[in-house]
Length: 334
Image 1 (cartoon, rainbow, N blue to C red):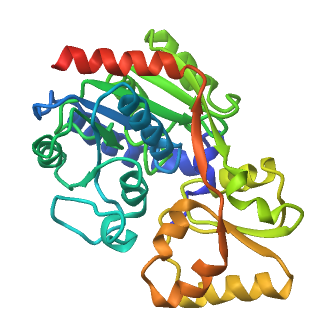
Image 2 (image 1 turned 60 degrees about the vertical axis):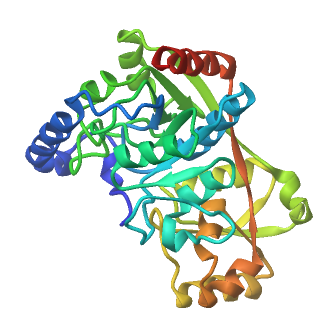
């Protein structure tokens, strides 16, 4: 399901009608967040966001894993494995496991650091500890109160911010903003800040550090596309963010296709994408997450083979401050 457009506009009739449901949902979510959580015996750093949909959590978790590894620690990533069919806690094998089994985000994490998937985050953190983790990086989970965190970084898309500021289903917030901010230690704003001014002000009022990130495309990975027109497609939280990244990387988008977050492509959709690209002599370009979801499915083999992947990395202006804050949280927990 795609995000309703009214989530990202000023609150109006639709959000007002759904506000009572949002109030109930928000109350339950805030109560679930309020507990101290179970300590797993290993420092836990949570990378989360306030809203449903993409903000850049996974690239941030990957960047953080690199920082902590560079500091001499052995970070493990912890993911719920959203979109995967696996129900039991386990460590991912990035060479053998598929996104259909363990989830697309978890598979990307496992390519850079040992990664555990677990619906029960306390059990998952315990498994990471048993396998030698010095620190656990929890990708998503700001709203999960079962596991105690030692440091929580909230990631916000600078263009969309928190939308209309209402709680689901009246808006994109997963819980009331004040309840979420109370559980955070810092804010990372990704991209242009124009849509995130309200949440930045709220974070500053709580005296939280506000840091700045940018998704930087690795154009060298697909340098052979320079000069060609492309058909860009993405099934992520905010496809328009990917399309903007493609344009900023210097590629001319002739056509684009947006799909819901974590979308599993059908054989018919795959064939249509390939046919449309071939008919207009366009190159297909997509995200790492989308390409990961195609692996292992014979009906998507042609689309996977013909699609170029534009990798991105999170570049954090205050990377040194983030590393210091994370390391301090690890020392306090040790």
